[in-house]
Image 1 (cartoon, rainbow, N blue to C red):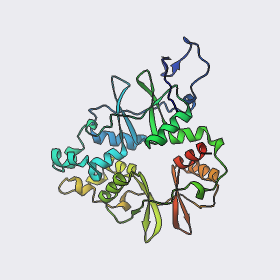
Image 2: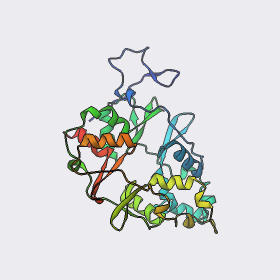
Image 3: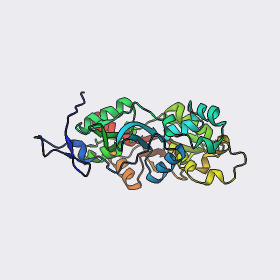
Image 4: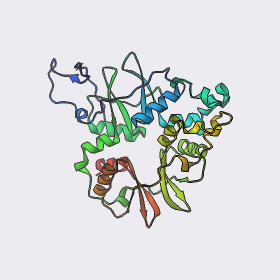
Amino acid sequence: MTFRREHRFLRSNGRPNFSTKKREEESELEKVIRRDVVTVAKTTPIKVCAQKMARSGYRRMPVTVEQRRLVGIVTATDIVNYLGGGEYYAIVQKRHKDNIFSALREPVSSIVTREVVKAYYEETIEDVVSKMIKFNVGGMPVIFEDEIVGIVTERDLLRAISNQIPDLLVRDVMTRNVVTASIDETLLDLAKRIVERGVRRLPVLSQNKVVGVVSSMDIVKYIASSEPFRHMVLGLVKEVMNARVADVASPSAITITPESRLSDAYRLMIERDVGMLVVSRSNELKGLITERDILLACFSR
């Protein structure tokens, strides 16, 4: 599949202006783009970036220069990686001697991904879905004339094509090999699993029963709050990451049965404002179903 790009113009409100050029049709992405993009600069401290994520609810922060020129992206998983989950933690150890206050002042440029998977305004919804699948991303900045004009996510795309959800059951498309977290394990152990296994949302188990859900964003929200610093003694990252999953996880999971219809799963996600459902029967974990699973089903018929 080819990805097409053309040269067009922007209106003062940030939307492409086609009035000066003849066109056949408006971009398909126009109806799904989120315009309220929250960005950070290369010099923004990681702490401030985490706070922006927590306030906005966006787990991706485009990094821009010269107003809106995209130079990279930072995700919640990058921050989890930095705080002990992966290779970025070496920066904390070598440059900051594990001091949490110093570490959180580090600029995001140290953990930014510079090769950004992006959508271009003129591309189709199918183009963008193909990119998400190929590069395993759940959202991407939308670019016009080298500037970011919006962001588009799996949820946005799925909402646009929700009338195309196939007549399948949840068990037909759910993920069966589920990575889980224990209610009693530390955030450090959780962070390592998130990075190593490439997941961002995990069911939380206690005595083999699902008791909640935890995500990379839950760790970021915890770091962005004042809670980790209330009882700190030495001021070390390890102290913060020694908190338990129970301290940050959502205390209940939104569940659905394997025999439910895919359209019902999507409707429940919209009603509860979640991107993942735990598939269970009699409180026994059977799998997970995500917005991506439903999106894939729409394009795999």
